[in-house]
Image 1 (cartoon, rainbow, N blue to C red):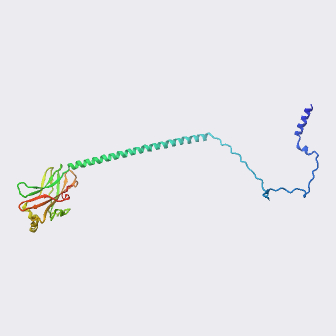
Image 2 (cartoon, one colour):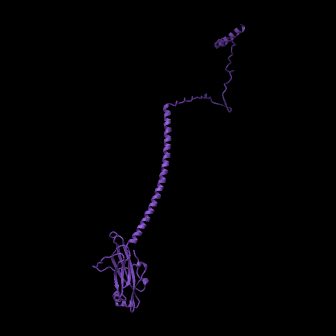
Image 3 (cartoon, rainbow, N blue to C red):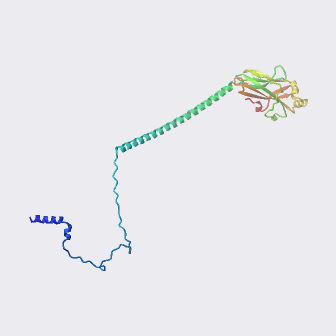
Length: 286
């Protein structure tokens, strides 16, 4: 019972308001005089009194509350993920397509190059075939059978198609040496009103352009003085000419060719001769 009463007393003391103890008589406090009051303590900053400082206030901001992830955000995130995957697949597909296009382009370039080479070869073959089938008119000097010191200048078609001779020019040239022959030859124009009659030559056919005999030498020289120089070999007499012909199977005005010729007329004491002479340019064929 004593212990129980002691416990009750202690609980009562613990629950008793603090004001009750303030009324308990105590010793009277002695208030010191101003002279006896101690001086206020000021903070010392390296031996120098510091200014009165305001108390530092620290504000603690609470962390924001987490934002809830709604169903709309989840759908948006899933849609963005799907779009990113679709975009990546599209980029990879585009890269693959570009690579295929590059390979196809390279193959097309190779095919076009091969086709161009084949076409060029076919063109060369066609040109060669056309050249082999075209007419070739050659001019030669041949002696006339049965007539001494008489020669004919003849045009012969040695090709495989007909030729149409549209022009025939000739010129007499006097020089002291064959090396002094002019190149090109300047041909005199035919007299006014004189018209050349075109000649058709079939393959293998010939036509006489000029006939020269020993009696024609003086007429070719023009004067007796020139004839004496030619007869004494102090001057040389050359006969040069050019013919123009076309291919009958070609369009009008197309495939025009030329044949040039040059011969040296040798007038001896008893006999005469006509032999080919001149540079290759004076005996060219186109």
